[in-house]
Length: 239
Image 1 (cartoon, rainbow, N blue to C red):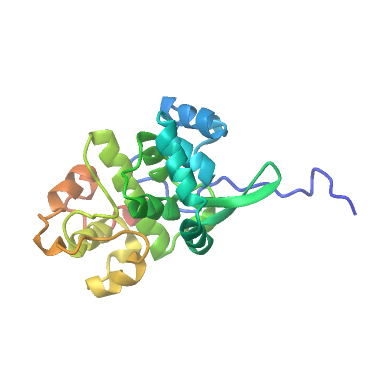
Image 2 (cartoon, rainbow, N blue to C red):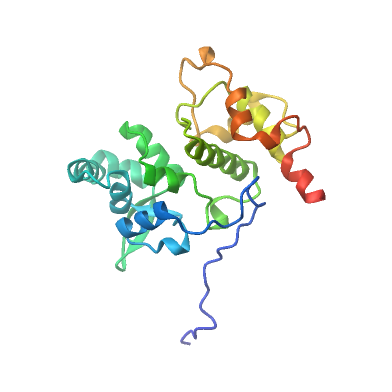
């Protein structure tokens, strides 16, 4: 039986988790996302896509340098990176044909492995909230990803440096922030309990023991969390 327009499922663009800590649920399109849309071929008015093809990803990483863009694409189509993308990437459909692509998580990992910092355009994409609820949700992993995205977004807005693949401070600094912001973490007592959610999401350098305390940075990024010990989002639910 041929499907009618009424039976065709449409993607759910609603957020399945709480609104951002202090920002509107949906931001109007700005110059950054509109530029990215023109380069990558999506409509910026619909928000950031959850996945990018490697061609789109390369275009956003090197929008003004065709040589660097070609070098990245050549590497990604090579045997070594093809295997990595098969294990960590996603399949995207472009022009009715499947091809390799990345989500925010694997895109951040790719840049780290390639040895470059994200461009301004990719910072915007990496720091944007996912549209599809399957990529996040109200789980520990989903809430951790959301807070890290907020760290990236707020750092960029304040002109600060935040690299989730070379995290500031120590793991306990992040845990203390999560306990203040997220109800799911407020009763977590040890870094060992947090470790299970960190793999493939963020990393600390081997010299992290000598890192300065990240608490002052997190206080600047999340002023609403100062002195809070009941989790910001839980308090909002009761309001």
